[in-house]
Image (tube, rainbow, N blue to C red):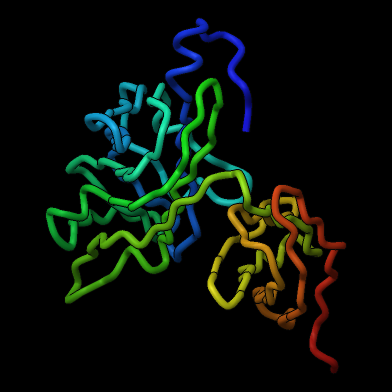
Length: 244
């Protein structure tokens, strides 16, 4: 939560600011491009508000938005009170790259162009909120009878009241998938070129962390307690090879 310093007195009392970011849980694709038009939010005491995605080129490679990467897709003022709905609005064009080949995709249904979340964010005057939309590509892209369809599976969360988990896996060349499991969450990410991984939007409690690297390295699993509103760091994990 950040207090706004540049508002006029009346505007500060009557409005908050939302910054809406897009992030990704990875899938088995080199690149996945979707056309992002913007984000619509609904305050409980007013009409829907649309925040345009500013760049002229609105094609976004969602597969790049893993780890600490994020993309600002909407930003603007919102009246104080409850924000009851948030919708990521997508365009018509979408495709993926696999083994260097471009493959056009289609939506599973026309309704999938609008990814709708019911929310209950209490907006206070003069306060800035960072909100996240997390698309799970592994579950969102499906191949059916030789055609790839996009049926988005996503979650949304605020940075407030959530935890962040980060750590490093050696050697970086293992490029493992990292899974975080709890009673309510199943989250996935990849390590970056330095072997670092990063999870946002975790609830308080114990998570089972599963590291699943490429051969010849073996899997590693452990439990990590998560505290909210803080950065939870895990000591560096050194992967092992199977015993000869």
